[in-house]
Length: 191
Image (cartoon, rainbow, N blue to C red; front, side):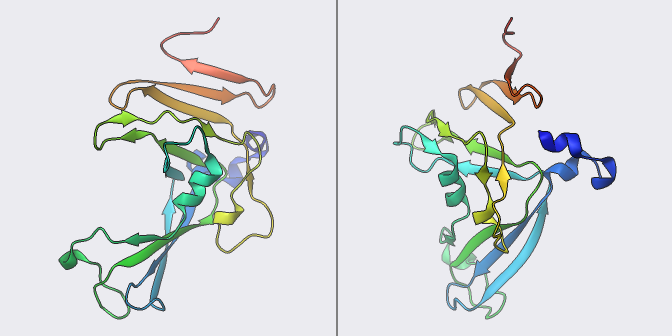
């Protein structure tokens, strides 16, 4: 939150949305010829990364592990044969590999932890997430690679519950001056 104190309107002429603006670098590799690569940049505001809980058998899950999994190459093989995408270079329809990188980091990043599993039956994953309160380094996920760490501190948490289909939200925010955490909950108010 110290970042907010030093911000000036002229630094962000389009307003608050600019604080959450990011660019993602997408890379698609042809399944027939790995030298055929198409790339593009897509702009997002807000920077919102949906992270999956890959192994629900763990007692707790480190957030950096979830982020790393989010940026791994993915073989897109869930297409029917007639629906396979066409390579933009060789024009052959084949399974391809997608990978994404962060091209431009925002001032603030939002992570959405996907906790609902719908198959074989709907359930909510309750594994705690180990989130570093300070110095989450995002440099491994940025292209071009940065030689300096790109560090983020946790300043807020938004939580939904108790089930996937119903409940309410509560928020926890860190006061930038005192460093104390505060609960914001419409169901009960702490005294």
